[in-house]
Amino acid sequence: MDIATLTGILAGFGMAFGAVFLGSAPENFVHAPSLMFVLGGTCAAILLTSPAQDVWQAVCAGVRVLAAKSLSARDAVSAMVHLAEISRNEGIMALEEIQTSNPILKKAVHLVTDNASPDLIRDTLDVEILALRHRRGISTAVFLRLAICAPAMGMLGTLAVLLQMLTGLKAPDPLGPGIALALMTTFYGCLLSMLVFLPIASKLKTYSTQEEYRLNIIFAGVNCILENNNPSLVFEKLSSFLTPRERASVIR
Image 1 (cartoon, one colour):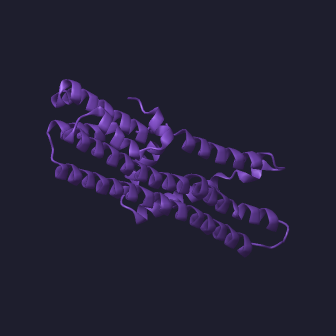
Image 2: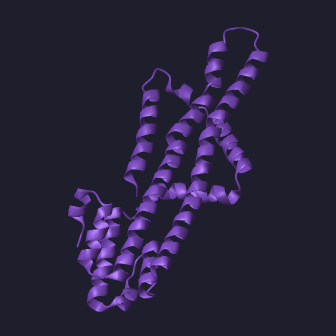
Image 3: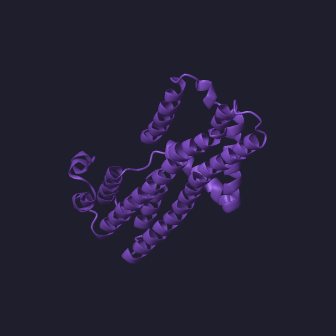
């Protein structure tokens, strides 16, 4: 689980609602119809602007941002050095027995055991990066549209309530509470945009860059193993991808 993302969302909502409930009238910030208007309108808008398959893919990617524990650059280097050690001591075909849940590492093992050429490895890397950019680009675009739609729906709800209130206004007494209620949808829309949709979109973009980096590490390691499966040489080449602190902590 990505603790940073979860902590950020919980802290953001906690501080926002903490400030609200420490105020004089926290019940004024709770209005179910306004929240339903913003959520329902935002969902409808995103389904109108994006295919259902893209929306579902974005939802799954957003869940993975919270739940998934991705392979770090240091772990990728350690894994490739470990593969080089097995290849050196037991032969390349022994890598077929390696069990891993990481699909990229699985593909790397298959390339090594199939004695793939450097050109094929480079082509495979290019295809993987292209597919990764495409998937992450779709998911990021959906969350960016959500971040735009939520405040817009909030403003639409505010205008609708203000219109109803002003057209039926006979006395100025309820003007203040009416305006406060009208602004509730804007509050919910901005809160969802700034604390949920925009952070997830930004995180997905960051993860995409990090995954591309790890792909380059893994496939550079495959090339090293095929050219010379000396674990020390594999480490020396792949350690260039790491910071000095990460190099010192690589398990060899």
